[in-house]
Structure formats: C-alpha cells, structure tokens
Image (cartoon, rainbow, N blue to C red; front, side, top):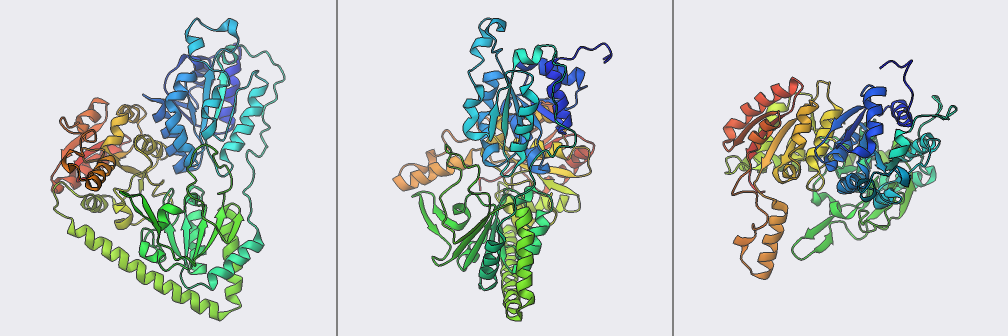
Length: 583
C-alpha cells in the first residue's frame, strides 16, 4: 500500500491504538459489521495485530482467555454485531469469573438510520448493545464519534488490566468505522503515559497483626488462588510460606506454588482438619476447597475446626457481580487487608522476618511446623504414587496410568500443561516447579479446547512443549477449533481423554438413581458419546492436523505421544486419542 496516496479512515485509528497498546493477536469469526475495521487491520495495519479466524465466537473468546492466563496480557477479540456477541456470551462469562483480561471489540448499526441496509442492519443491531453483557464485563462503551474512540480505549484498557482483571467490551458503530478520517487534530494517547495504575498496597498494620497470629499458631495454612497470573508471585509465595512456616493449598486457577515443595499440602483435606489459622490470598470461593460435599444430598460440612482464625489478603470485595453467584458463600474473617498480593506478600514476609529475628522461640516453633508439614507432604505424595501404581493395567486405561505414562515421556521436555489435570492425577504425580508450567485448572464444558489453544498461541515460536488432557465432550462442542489450530499453526499436543461420555452428568444421574431406587443402568441415557463413537484421530486429520488413535492398549501410548511430540516441535498441532475409564 502506497501510504503517500492513502486516505486514512476512522477504523485506522483503532488499529493505531491496538498497536500502541501491544495487542498482537485478534481472534474472530467473520462478520460484515466490522468490515471497515477488518480492512484497516489487514491493509493499513498489514495484518498486525494478527487476525485469527475461528469457527465460533466462543472459541474466539476462549483463545484470548487462555492467552491471558498464560501471559497475563490481553489479546483482542472481534464479535460480529448483536448475533456474534450473543454467541460469545458463555465464554465471556467464564472469562469474567476467571478474571481474564480480554479486549473485546464489537460492532453495531450503523446507528445512523439512513445508512442501515434493509433488514440485516436492523435485526442485527441493538440499542446500547453492550448492555447484554454488562453483568459479566468490567466495562463497556459505544463511542458515537471518532473523538470518543481514543479516550474510551484508554479507559477500557486500564480498567481491563487493573486487578481484579476481566474482559471489557467496546462497540464500534459500523458507519463510524467506514467513514474517512476528517478530524485533523485527533488527540491520541501520549507515548509516555502510564497505561494502568500501579498495584495497590495492603495496610501494614493489618499485615503485622496477621504475622503475629500466624507465627503463634500451631498449624497455619495459606489458601491461594489467582496470584500465579502475575510474574514473580510464584517465587514470592515460596518465600512467604517458608518465612512463616505455613502449609500451602493451591486452589489452581493458576499455578501459584510448586506442588512438590515440602510445604505443599494441596488436595489434602486431612491437613485442613488441624488448621488453627487460614490465610486466604486472592481467594474468591473459600468453601469448595475447605468443605466436604455429599453431592447426592447436597450436604456440606467444613473440614476446618470451628475455632480456626480466618484471614484474607486480596480483592474479594472488588468487582463483585450483582448478577452471578460466582463469589460463593461468604466466609467471615477476623483480619482482612485489601491489596495486591504482589506487594502484600513480600511486605508480610518482611514484617514476619523482623519478628522472627527478635524471638528465637518463634523460630523454633516455625521450624517444628515446617517439619510437620514436610512429613505430611511426603506421606500424601507417597500414598498417591502407590494408589496410581495400583491402577496400572485397568481396562479401559485409568487417568492415573495415563498421567504416569505421559510424565515418563515429557519429563525432560520444557513443558507447559494448558488446562485439564486428568482428574487431578497430574498434580499428584508430576513435578510442577516452574511458574509457567500450568496456566490453571479446567473450567466448564465447552471451554478447554479454546483456552488450551490460547496457551499454545502464547508459546508459539518458543521451545516449550504445550500439551493438554482434552475431554471428548468438551471438544465435541466445537471440533472446528482443531481447524483453527492447524490454520494458524498453534503447536500443541492434544491428549484426548476419551471416556465416550459426558460423565460428570452421567455420575449425577447415577446418584439420583441410587437415591430414588431407580434403574442405574439407564443413567447413561442422554449422557453418553457412543453408538456411534466419534473418531477423533480422523477428525483431526480432516482439519489438517496430525491425528493418531483411538488407543486402548497402554503399551502403545508412549510411542504415540513421542511421534506426536515431533510434529508439535515442528510447529504444528497433533492429537492422540486415548480411550480412558470414566473415573
């Protein structure tokens, strides 16, 4: 394009802003409402940011969701007017409750009635379109003139990345995009501006009280959630736990703590039964990890003693939806400090260390706690290994055996687990000792394939081996995601956990049958994925990527994974389909 002869259009301003804010990728499903912006990106912007075509708007949002988890940085998504936005809503909701910053751009109208095409521009537009997603976006805006685009862009970006982070929605009028730029003195963001606020510190006096409570406790625990998304927090939490002598339970919305560190007691409910202090750091839902659920009767009981002291550092009182119940049941706390863990954790460690330096009794008590947690940690990991070994040779293949076989293959690689944890067996058997090795646990069905591709995109062009344990039901929601992986050469090893069922719900129906005395053998009706069984390897090949399986013999898994890894190392995706047991 000859820029000397080029007449600039208003949608070019959006491209200038995307570049200035280092948004490098945009996932999308095609739509005419953003044809002006599309042309600006591929011609004026020379396809920078990179446009990535998806077969469904949910996948487009999920890719950005996984990318944000892996990098802590936002990428863009474009949604086609009203209908594309409505298609994407489930994925946007998951991104919101998972605190993923995503810069979502929509389009509408034209709002200028005289410029609307008959029928289609009317039925596909809405008045204040962002209102439909307002309950699960941090902010939305619909600028009416080009002068409003830079200002609202700055506000949207800052709002999006400020913790607790989350998606925003910017709706750009179709006619606004397509008009020529006539504003000669449009005010753009200064190059030297600070794009988002600095982290918020916690109250030092409250942190001092927390340090006293923990250092004088017998069995204090740290319950931690989202903090692994920020660089350095993995190491900060290790330093804090070692200074305080606390056991650590990582809820696993992000990898926050090395799972084989002696103070790690994640997934060990017995440790909760002795807790006299629990410090939650950036925790939204306290109840699930600390309570026992009898799913059949919905009975919930706490593992934690009644006299346990509860404390909190984080953002729980901020950005709380008035619509969704994702915040869970309220846990009363004796001490609460509102603040960013990036600053609070080292400050708390500093305060605690000063107290330890002045009191040898506190040091001795801390060392006793560390030894007790270490002994417990070693026991639970030994028990998990013993349990996994006992499951070898099961037919179909158990998740435990699959996790062991996969670990033997990838142990010496520089690996990244994208989402699922094979029913937690990878957390029990693998060694997560680097902060990037897991982007966070899986979410609901119809999220994992897209989020996994986003993690793969984050590490595209690096030497890291990205893999995921992919549920079959989840992939069936949008098998077209495999085409996106092949099209854009997203290198990822997809290990299909093919249990030929939506078993989470199947299991619920078994519980109902047992409770009511009805026929358990009918529980699979409406829940199974067999008769016929999908051929995922052939499906992958039809989408232009490597596929192998379905494998039912455990002795064939390792060699199949190694063949697939060679494909991934060449820069392309690969899928290995493995038939596994329901549990």
